[in-house]
Image (cartoon, rainbow, N blue to C red; front, top):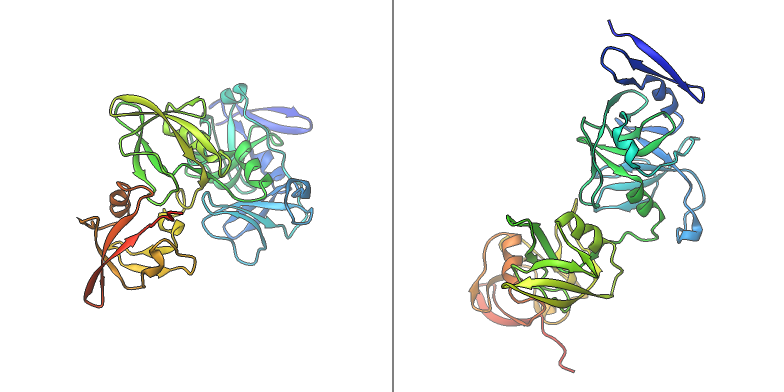
Length: 356
């Protein structure tokens, strides 16, 4: 039989099992009802009202944080981050907003729960949130839209399922930013077998793209890039339209290039969307599926149904990433595309630059 010793803090009682040495967070489930609103099979979590002084135009009222790929039905969406699946919704009930706390080193040694009004599981923080792409984790599963808590009114994040949770800094960034924005340098990278950050995909239409396949990213704007988590954290927070110095190693030689920062167009929960920069969309076999009225620099000559057969005399591969990789050999350069339209083949000069 499990025996509990009870400890009371500010009128809230927690049970400590003498048999398994784990907190009983059931008392906190009652408290959680003050902060959460049932939405389908999950919950919205009350946050402080949006502050118009921070650039938000919504009225000051309680808002709900909600994590999911799609917005819940019958809720007014105040803000949405499609990259991470975060929503701010207008609350339908009168709730008490939670106050999120930063994670300090001592918290890493404490018992932590992923908790909703109906259930909880407890464990310890396993990893901190390294970047928007890599959530923090508990060593136990977490419930989607759950409170990450030690004692009932001490909250350190919001659970998103799969053992993952989002820390205060990144929730604050989402809530307080007037627009949803992540920086981009026009490359995708990976941790190579030598534990270096290597370029493995290049945005071919990114303005003044200085990178090449195989470049090793050593330093961005004075900060050492030891892994892809650090790369993401730094790049995503870079202001738009500035130039930053990037120290690289190319073919064994260290050098420095200047890279322009622009808005990220895809990635994380979104599919990559490199062609959005030039106003077209394609299928995996490089058939044109859409041409925007804003298309320029030769792309406006394309028509829906055109199939691209060759680029600079090279046969087009199958698959979106393979096509981007081929185009990435000619970053921000004019290209010669062989087009098939209604069984007639012809060449177009694409990505033409204004000579004036």
